[in-house]
Image (tube, rainbow, N blue to C red; front, side, top):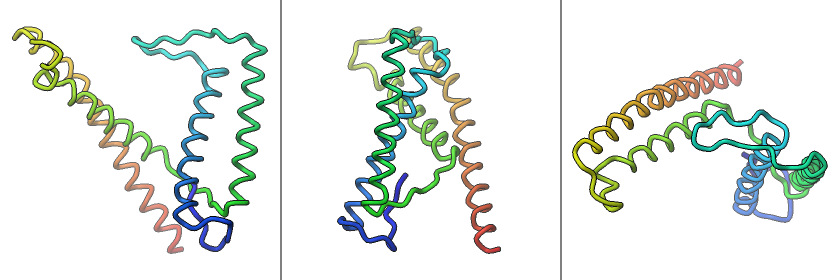
Length: 161
């Protein structure tokens, strides 16, 4: 995420810079996703399989435009008085696990009855599947949270030195 730098004075106030910095950070994440899609490995997901449907020339043109956007963001950072902030992987992993757990909670048999009635066997099967998915996601959340704490302690120790 990009945060306002109080030592730099740009044309915007702190609230403007926070909002713009947050939006630019999301745009940068989307650019990362675009780059992964045009050059990275194909997904190994079971429900959403990717296929390469871009011509190599189109992929190269897209990569060029991504770089143009990155350059514009880099330029805007200085003009607007934004300061880049680092974010550890643990926070992103923790957030992804938490939102996945929320998605699974929203699939609980008692919560999806609005889509139609489930018989007892289907309800039981769905609940078992959800429980099977939740256990490793809870562990991922827990491990990422430990990583966040370890990172905070390391950063604090470094600043004390």
